[in-house]
Image 1 (tube, helix red, strand yellow):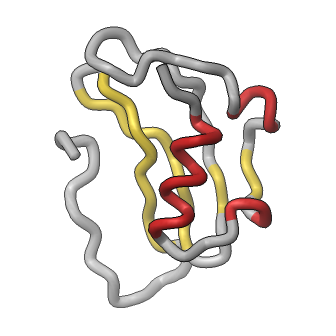
Image 2 (cartoon, rainbow, N blue to C red):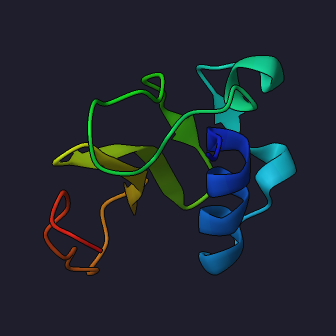
Length: 86
């Protein structure tokens, strides 16, 4: 079991973002709602979160769920395919 709160904290830390200053469509209690991120049925709630440099959103492939991200502003960063096994 996991939750979007923990997964977003990890993703923002990897990107050098300040998790505490991100804006999100879910409140903290919704972000902390546990779900099974393994294979099977999609369980995590949909969300979008905005950091200073990145936008975060749920990714699902064959029932596995994790946080994806894309640059918030136009830039020269080429993104890898999203939705494929990590």
